[in-house]
Image: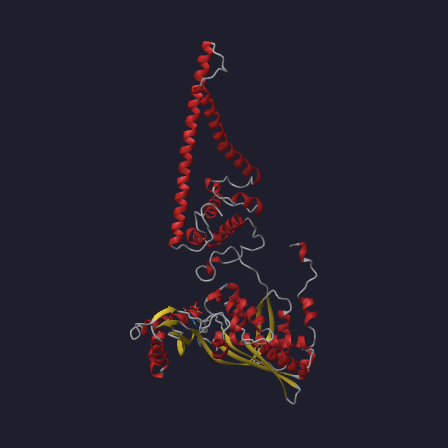
Length: 551
Ligand code: ADP
């Protein structure tokens, strides 16, 4: 990192600004000191040269031997040598440094004084290798970022051009880190579309292949399910599950609940006061007033329930609300904020510790989501015909039922699983989430799933179901509006807000997620039951390419 600070650190707070000012003033004062000392040595050098020339001239005129020197002359000679060394070391070094740069980076514009202070700049230019030509103007901005003079996060607002900001930031980070980002694409992405909502300080984008599983016949409609993944077998396997479901007449899904949650934590001086608020919030007569206050936040957010939990004098208030086609975290948080402000009138002794007290519970494994649900709670089922189990899934009903009981139910119970009574729900959830612009971190609770298998129709056919209590998805907001993700939503017919019935698109997406999980469960369980798992992974997941050659 350059002497000017850490340009890729967090946005400024008072401390950062202060730190930057201190660094700048230090740099200014060190420059000042350097000029003064150069001046003194230069003056001394000229004076002693003048004195020695005069003495040499006088000695020649008087025929005095040159080797006979007085104390003053000796002192002058020593001062002359010292000032010569000083001046040579300083100016000689600058010259060598300058020539060295030009030799190695002939195409690079001449370094400005800024980079003299950047201890990494020289190293990184060598390591990163030659880059596309940059304009002098861009080079100056890169150097300002490298030296810490321009904070990396301010590039978009400073340049007013998001793509240019990403390119410049990328070059600056390469120089600072002394490592190349070659291979990470930067072109072909709309950086304006992520500004202020999806990703800060971009330097490019990661490519994830998108495969399609389907058609999935769900509730009488066909869906082609986009899955973004780098795991071989996953799309192929889900596709096989879709085929088995299709050949058996399709799957059916039922939405059990639709409500996003947020639970602030508030503290009182006594447990008694905390309990008083709990009783107030859970009193059915108060619900309408609280809902009116909550619902002011959005056209779509509608309060459904309030559930409280107490820990001593701390109260955790879990608000649940419908959120239309949005996943809903912002919406529910705004509603909660309104209610907390309203409560201050009667509970002025309430201390709001945090808008989220983890009883929500977002992006953490928690029994509250598994039991109460969060987002969309969905159950999806299908009856797979005996012949399909044999021909498509290459196994039999009895083996599947037995494996499900011993693996997904008993095995997970033995492991102390929390919502993990399935084979690989999170594989499908994550892939569909990435493809459709959902928050991938929410795959934690969204993948809660219990897979059930039972022999039906006299033991011939297989009833399979997945029950997923907390699928958190939206079709507006967040990453859903980005071009690629929105194309995938479009393929599913759930892009954006549903104009006729707000929330139908998001609910439909949740049901597709559950159906895709059903397909994935069927196929993987069949592969395990048939003993094919390792073989198919060796075929699809391990290419013959020797990657070690490239790494
Ligand atoms: P989240 O609450 O999931 O974080 P955002 O707040 O980013 O999502 O997005 C929701 C925004 O989209 C709100 O401003 C909301 O008014 C708007 N919106 C437009 N149409 C809909 C809809 N059908 N359902 C939900 N929100 C919608």
